[in-house]
Length: 470
Ligand SMILES: Cc1cc2nc3c(=O)[nH]c(=O)nc-3n(C[C@H](O)[C@H](O)[C@H](O)COP(=O)(O)OP(=O)(O)OC[C@H]3O[C@@H](n4cnc5c(N)ncnc54)[C@H](O)[C@@H]3O)c2cc1C
Image 1 (cartoon, rainbow, N blue to C red):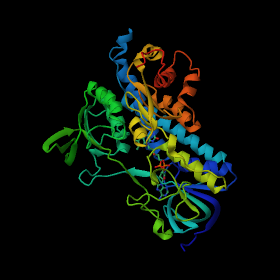
Image 2 (image 1 turned 135 degrees about the vertical axis):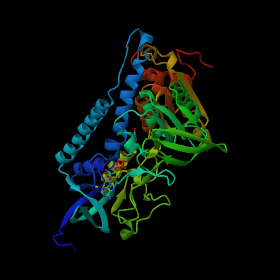
Image 3 (image 1 turned 90 degrees about the vertical axis):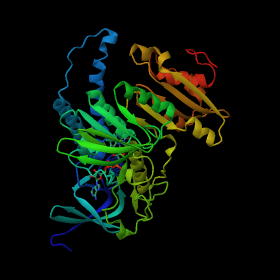
Image 4 (image 1 turned 180 degrees about the vertical axis):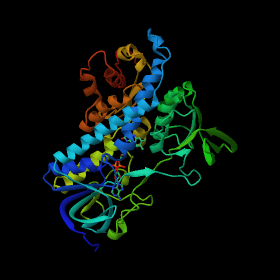
């Protein structure tokens, strides 16, 4: 034992204060547990400090700037519009600070003990927390691991001055003249499109045959079209090979269908995925069962193979999304408190905050058919919605899928402005087990984008009013 080391007893120890961890801690405290939460960094995790929130703030700024260039379409002249990027960054930081400050107050208000430091397991009931030269031991009855993930570093593209992960790309103090984005997943597309809107010349290299793999092509096509309008060059089926960096730029060598190409830019942003933070926790000490990808194996209650240890968020299987982490956090806390909670992923929405936004929940048409459903499908365009046109945003559609036999809503895909908000109605419909008819019988205020969801459901039943039904 290190001299001065003492042990604190606690009901629930939460490791990691991201959207998984802090939500789990609060829920456990609400249920009467004594809770401590430990993080080596600020509260809020990746999502608040280096992920969801800062990226959405930059997206908003870029969108406002770019839309001013089209203001003349609706009779507004905005000339000589300038970006003060350091002011944009300051504002972004202020948003992050407000939210992380809010989380700190919530933890305090729920009487949760906050600890700073890196965690190492000693045994199934005890960890050591290292903060500089200080080491303390914590004994717990239950523990929730929520240590999240970090960007994957490619061997051929080591992070440095000119090769960035999403963290540094969010922190740039000047708008780059040019940028190569390796990886056309949601993080790469959101950031690449944001900088393109600010005027950066962007090249995207994606290995598969379409950007945003995982979303249907009929959705990503709209995004591709807008990227093109912004002057972004996209190479699909592209394999990034190597990079040469100087003080001021980087040259990426890549191949497309066997042909070698090069592109030089101020920065290279590598967004090829994320790796779980499970390698430095000393999980060997408790014989934790892991997958080949270093994820912690859990059951439908977020229980690991170690009976009193739970895992949630980016360290377990499933999409690396903040709302998934928070949801699992609540389930884990409730199970610890003896409630019969369990995970049901049927209605977890996925959103990309690109332009136009895309969002999906539940099953796609193909997935539903693959699962043996006979489907009813309704698709309604933004272009036939009064609110969309009065907002000068006519791009996109809502597609809704129902089961022909029961009428139950199975899923939806949305492309267009506010897709991120519209998807919530369909998530609720799936969660509640409602039918397409229930949506059509729900009065949607006029004129709103929400009416597009209602009309898509009416279309699936063959009686949309504002389009000809086939
Ligand atoms: C650029 C970007 C944009 C994103 N946008 C979205 C979005 O719009 N919507 C969305 O749903 N998701 C988004 N995400 C994903 C989202 O941020 C993650 O899914 C989410 O943060 C995962 O939450 P978590 O609680 O599992 O872990 P994290 O948020 O990663 O938090 C883990 C915490 O654990 C701490 N920690 C790690 N190891 C230790 C240790 N040994 N000891 C002590 N503490 C430790 C870390 O410091 C960190 O604070 C985005 C991610 C990125 C990178």
